[in-house]
Amino acid sequence: MKLIEGVTVRPLKPIHDERGYLLEMMRPDWPEFEKFGQAYVTIGYPGVVKGWHYHKRQTDHFVVVKGAAKVACFDGRDGSPTKGTVNEFFPGEKNPILLKIPPHVLHGFKAIGGEPVYVVNFPTEMYNYQEPDEFRVPWDSPDIPYEWDVQMK
Image 1 (tube, helix red, strand yellow):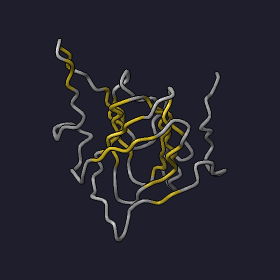
Image 2 (image 1 turned 120 degrees about the vertical axis):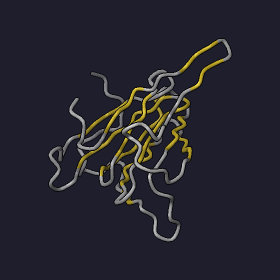
Image 3 (image 1 turned 135 degrees about the vertical axis):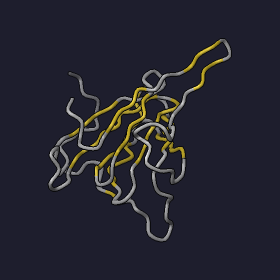
Image 4 (image 1 turned 30 degrees about the horizontal axis):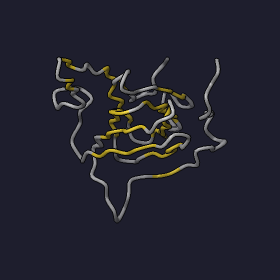
């Protein structure tokens, strides 16, 4: 799959022992790190699409820590070499990745596998309650060539 310009995927490596495991999700010495804005967890319930939205200033860094998700990104940016490209990712407990999503790239996610999904985000900006840097587009927008339903290929 050709990645949208600015989107990156870093496979994460759980460190296991008989007690459990440790999973590093973000480090300042990784090239994906720009700056720390805040950290939060968002939970998606089965059958619900949380998207589409984008940010004008903020870069998102998603890590799924429980369950599994279908994360989709769409590049609608004028002048982008990947304009019109859709990327689809399946992060989860069995596929631990850090997904970096740059400003102006539309994105959303949906729980898959019949259970809620827990997504930790490390955005580069703090949430501004007076002027949120979040711009929404309907999940079923005809302007985005993507279907959230299960694809039986």
